[in-house]
View 1 (cartoon, rainbow, N blue to C red):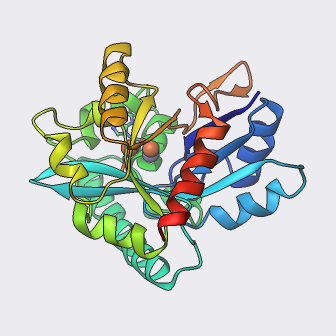
View 2: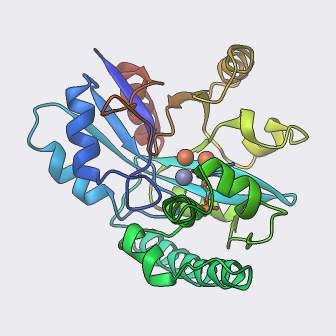
Length: 276
Ligand code: AMP
Ligand code: ZN
Ligand code: FE
Ligand code: FE
């Protein structure tokens, strides 16, 4: 196989596997490479790079997924081939992580006020040093029997408009693009099929986005065709990935359910680094 899954979360954010486990599984599943794209953090990248050295020719693309805001709507922005040692990105992601800590405290307070017995140290125990997100809190609600699934925890309590929801700190789309560009990365629009459909992709692209996540586990075939055509017409990089977090089938994590060809990603790297 010559395939790369360009959208993977590790336990540096809200995935359940460590970067090393993700790399080992990806190799076993026959992938040629993966992009580590944790929410708002670059903390998983170094470990993934080290783990990949055991294998000949397994490619790790250092990446990030930023939740940004544009016109009051949430836009997810992927950054690929970032220099994770860049000081700006280190400082900004650190600040965002601290905001996430505070937000977790606030969400727990709300849940406590609703008489759910859940503590910050429980959340921290499963999030470890990772960037804390709602999925961590959801998993505890399931573990304690307050809800039967993570999905139900979101629907009842954690999603926007629900009683334990707390707004997350977000960069503007312009700040996100700037941060990725400063770290020499390629800014790519994540899963446009999931963003508010009133948003015009063209206005986002004009801000400096270089690619589109055409293929995503939650995109329909029709959406993929549309995005593919748009990307081709506008000479944008075409990426895709499974947005892997925690799905497991018969003991095997479902990494690589969505992939793109290795050569197209190498081309992306080559073309982009030429322009720098
Ligand atoms: P946070 O970063 O804390 O805002 O949490 C966002 C993450 O929660 C997303 O990346 C998804 O992994 C997960 N998520 C969001 N909405 C849902 C939902 N309805 N059901 C399950 N997981 C969700
Ligand atoms: Zn997530
Ligand atoms: Fe996303
Ligand atoms: Fe994601």
